[in-house]
Image 1: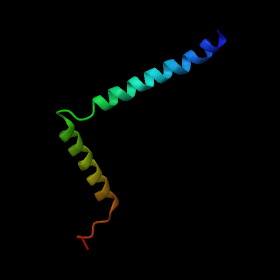
Image 2 (image 1 turned 30 degrees about the horizontal axis):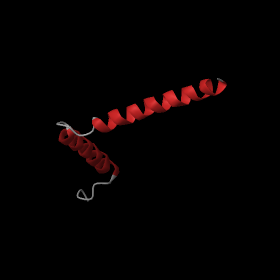
Image 3 (image 1 turned 30 degrees about the vertical axis):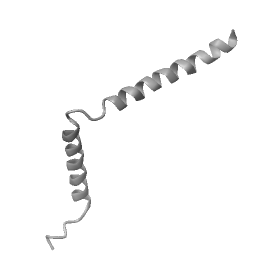
Image 4 (image 1 turned 135 degrees about the vertical axis):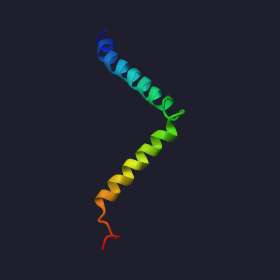
Length: 58
């Protein structure tokens, strides 16, 4: 019975991990996907603009 107590924690952790991945995959998209994508694109554009020197000001 030692093998059961040795294998139970990894099996339980694997089951919870798989459930977490399933929840993450199922919650992707939906009605707010376009808004979330637009917010990420805007943040990336701001970060890129701040990192790059302004070439038009010269």
